[in-house]
Length: 369
Ligand SMILES: Cc1ncc(COP(=O)(O)O)c(C=O)c1O
Image (cartoon, rainbow, N blue to C red):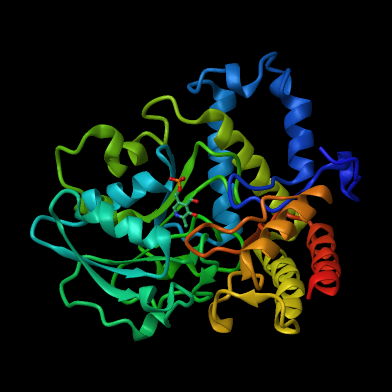
């Protein structure tokens, strides 16, 4: 551990982890304050029945707050499930692709690829209608330009590819059924939920600790779910039981609820979007003005959550990452499929962390460029 102090409260590190990612300090403080005795109940959320009035209120408030934050229309249901976004790769086709039907998937990176693999596992039909493999997953198409198959049950896409740092940065037009893995950019920009049939997101980037997976689905989809699915894999069962069919990930749901309240207090998603644009611009402007750093994603598809870039050599990359660690800047190593570096700058990463990183990048370039 280096002796360098950061400018953040509690001398917290500059955390650029891709996930589980940074949480807001105010939320962590509230968690600390409530961990011994939640709301006068005498126990923590971790120790309380999920059937208690207090916990039911936690779930109901979290649902109400995410509805307010995202402007979720009344004909949508919000569920908190388990199994991560990875289980949704299986659950979505299991619930929404009827026998004999095919589905369309657009692949802009590693997670989209995994969604395709999972959709084929049960022998069901899945057609890849876009794959950016040829350019090592450096861009996303315009959704309106995708050629979708007539009769396909739905089109699946990954709004932000966490590993490649590639984002669509726009919503679909709402024709047909659009299903979106929004794990790494949910609440980062305004989204028109009515254009989507179903959105899912693992909690551990922008909404809370790992454990819960958020699913936002149009209510009428519940009617197309085949009978006889294993109950834990059946959206209908979870919807009928308000996400309390079995013991849910209570702790994760509780902290997600605190994050939702915090984001509302901060000014909601529009405020997050404004801050995220500013944070991302600090890094991309530097990358653009440098011959030393190169961005991975094409400009029109650059993620505001995961900024991926390379340095001229592997040796320099290693030196950059270890030097950053000395300055308490953590988790800057890129995924091996892209190489180089990745700075994940989720909602809860403060602008001070990004400023510190840009200063370090400038110094490093001046020394080694
Ligand atoms: C876009 C995206 N989809 C899916 C996943 C898988 O999520 P989980 O680990 O919650 O299953 C991740 C994890 O990082 C992700 O970033």
